[in-house]
Every structure is written in structure tokens, then in C-alpha cells.
Length: 178
Image: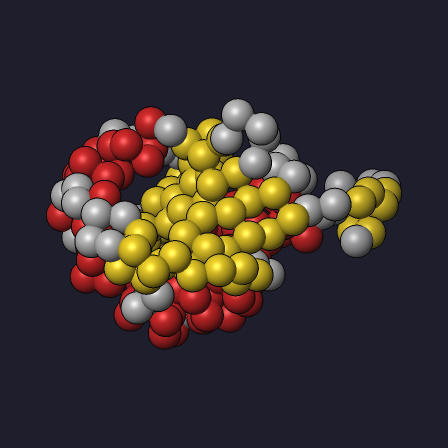
């Protein structure tokens, strides 16, 4: 979308991509201390999903996810961590998106739903320029995440009845770009 920029004496128009305008207001560069902060304050739904997937503790899952992530995002409300997520890179160039939230995230989201939806959608649009396709699996019990993923434009392609460590239903979600 064209965006008029003025610097006091002259102005010009340049193309600003929509994602540039939203998600960057909510992120901070990764710091190792964020892992403990999130692991100690992870929301119960995400703790359950992490355990169901791998049998791991929140900290072990975060360390593993962060180490395998190509694009990492630390999502904040000023100085309060809301969550950490990213996109892992598959050998074929596809991305594996993930996002784990703090307990504070849910109360913040209730007051800032529009901002959250807009900023996360813009981040996914940005990731769509990097990855030809993105996919992962979501715990079928996690209705909030399923609704959010649908808003982000992901399609749900199949259910795996015996997925992960707990062998419970997970739903594959996918998004193809281009």
C-alpha cells in the first residue's frame, strides 16, 4: 500500500508492506533470560500441548524450539513478555511455525484482541515472503489456538489420532504462499 512520507521540506511516496506497520511495535530482540521467564509462566494450555507433543517440560521444549528456529519473535506488551514464537526451517524450505504464551497473555489479549490479531497476521504475511509453505500440528483440545490459526489463514488438512508423546488427536494446519 502506498504511504506518504514527509521529512519537513519534501515528501515522497514509497510502498510500505502491511506487516511493517503492525507487529514490530510488539517485539524485542531475543535474550536467553526470556526462556526461563516463559517456561516459569507458560499458560496451562500451552504446557499441556508441549507435554502432549513431546513429553518435555516447558523449558526443555523452549530450548529445543529456539535452537531450531530460523525466524524468532519475542512478543511483548511494553516490558511484559506475552510469548515467544518462530518458524523453524525444513530442508525443503518450508517453515514450521510455533508460538508459546505466558499466563499474562490471555488477560492482555482480552483487552487488545484487535491489535493482537492484526500484528500476528502481519507477521505471518511477512513469513509468507520467506517460506513457500508453512505447517505444523495443533492439539485438537486447543480451541483458542485453532480459531487463531484459522484467522491467520491456515487450513486444517487432517487429524492425526495418535500424535506425539500422549498419542492424542492433533490437527495439521498448513498455509501455502504464492
